[in-house]
Image (cartoon, rainbow, N blue to C red):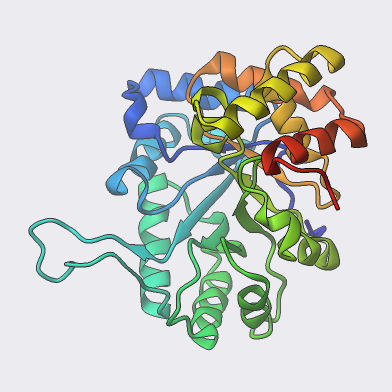
Length: 295
């Protein structure tokens, strides 16, 4: 991450906030728990919870405005899901037009009860992406003080470089899926570009959407066996801690996103900061995922 912007080592992800069915006081306790552990970066997107998650989080900031200065707020835009009963939104699609980016960012400010976003990401690469259009929106939002920094999510290297070529300021991150069951960024150049540009990626679904812990397919079973062995070797409390240590070991120094509303699981994830793997342990997990040794 460039010196102009930094985020906490772990990131709090709120895409399931509506599913947790928390009262306002419980939401406040959750945010304060994250902050007490040093997790100050809060990840959102306009569409999370059918456009409700940001508003629910914003109610916390409305109740306790002093919390805002203790955190970095991240949001994403660009996905437009179909809306039942709305003939104008009949198909899932992307919209990275300047007008939509600006409108979405301004709505996020309202929903989150804040005057600015610390970081705004384009949520998914758009086949109709006009880099000049996105750049004009980013520049306008930055000039207005509504968004301080910008980045992308799920972008390929060429898509990242295209957008960066139109900007006078650096993109700060690429939020990507990375886990022992989603290892493509290790080999397709995505993390190489992060190192080249000295930016730190954000890693979503580090536990494979829970599949690493619960799935019964051959690969998941093989991975859990290896993770359990390494857990015993390094003194981890559970195998999820081993996975977070595996993700963080990459030289691009990814920021794992914790997508949980369970305080105990959050504390466990953050406690993995004290754990380290050696190279053979790291490659043992790689081998368990692929089902074969390195060449």
